[in-house]
Length: 309
Image (cartoon, rainbow, N blue to C red; front, side, top):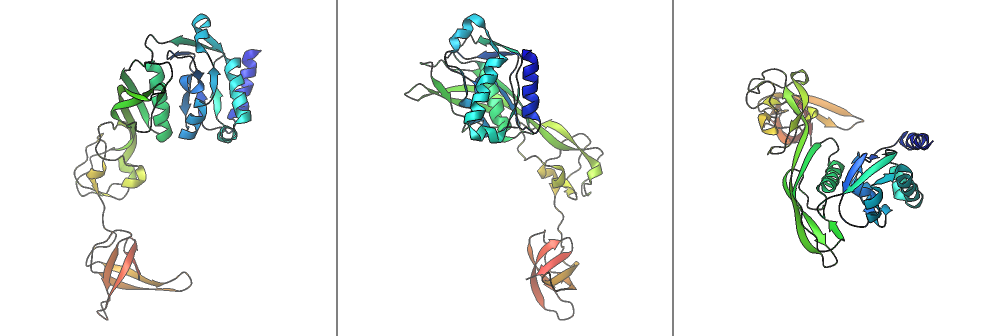
């Protein structure tokens, strides 16, 4: 009967729910008395507000009781969740769905701070910043706090590469550090054929592939960022395309005949003029009337189109 109840609970919450909070069937936690939902949960599609609310949900005031039982029933966890949903309007608005096994095996780490717990929390924090990213977190070392009460400070956590995560130890707020590495992968455009230098990149020339961007110096491009751009160098099949691999083609070129427009949405006229400058969309360039020889300024609003000022 218990398993049926849990299934109904999930369906009711998850019909329109985002994000999702799930708890593994087996978790390792740090050696401290207070056990919060944030210590054992994995979040998908969440944000920093949800992580803060999860931190406020206390599952056990004294987790040391788990040294004997070594497990928690789903009914206990769901009871705490229901109480939080009733009392916290912000949590109710976020309306997360929950995936909780009928029984959660809980074990304490051999060290005061559990590496597995820290990796879960770092993963949740990073996914709140970039849900479409895939992260692999490896904690290399954890300090030994002088007290059981300590807090993590995620405000300066780097998003990739090596990291040092501050631990505020006890009431005196002494800083200690957790070290590790973060690898991140994102969907990145990759050529499906050899694109030669100077060629225009077309949508059919590329596909999006999950790529390790941990040590990439360039930003990551989206599909819409590269369409119509020009290859600054030859782009081999299967190699990720970075911003430095592309260059924009001016929407107006010096000496090109452009359509110059004047007026508003109620009345507008256009005339062919010659661009005196190169310009991308949004740039202000000079255009010359070939008949009157008069030069005017205008904003490039589309390819070969200038809005006169």
